[in-house]
Image (cartoon, rainbow, N blue to C red; front, side, top):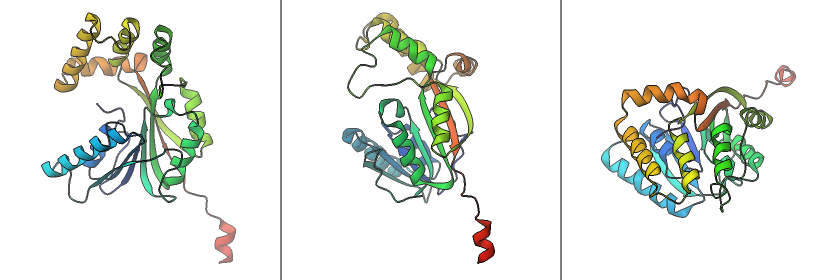
Length: 248
């Protein structure tokens, strides 16, 4: 289940991609399939081990084209272990709402992104997320949980302040909002409640089968209740110093 829309965020074979806070690796795997040179980074050692195993399995199965590479590694989003301007593309999906110093993370992403490079940022959308917080304290008052809810204009403002130029936004995963509302209403750790189990089966069926009816329904509902807000931006090239050019 991808949150980033690669029709709006195109990759070229050989692009060097950083999936920051990669989690289980869903976006990193897609980038690998598209021929990128992928680095999947997360602070969770257990998840990184699993992502590395999947990268190896994908290579063994021939799922990635020639020239594609994939590395999984532990790391700190506030102190990325890469030189300046190392990546053509950076993805950070459902991560920034967990990190107190979100401006610091943005600064690090901008540092390692090449001029002209592209960045995709996804966070929980304000409306659906606010419902979850209202229904359940346990949803967000956990170690490593969500510490803020972004409004779209707030996030876009921080993206601009970091020196990036937004070029597009959309919402995703409308069918997942009711599932999390049910989880919050019946208890975030209560997977036995009948409405929660029933809706989970629906989501699994939708993800596995991708029926046209639910695809159309989700596209129609995304502007109203999409669970995630997605923003795309570029890092501008530095303006040419014409005086220096003339002097040379």
